Length: 77
Image (cartoon, rainbow, N blue to C red; front, side):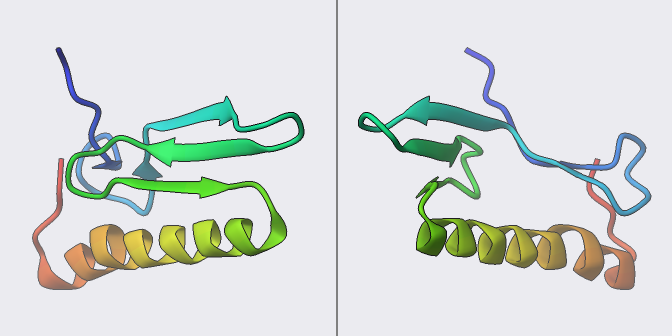
């Protein structure tokens, strides 16, 4: 079975992060957003507080995987 991974840009350069996401129903009126990347798994609901946590997680991942790699000169494919 192939495992999806978070990737940074197609060529390893640039400022784009590709994230494998799943969205599924959690109850009658709610959804859950999850990422199955083995190094950065997460799961959040779609309520206001959970969406803020999701946004914070995206900011954290972008900083770690894109911005920090640009400054260290170690791009990820």
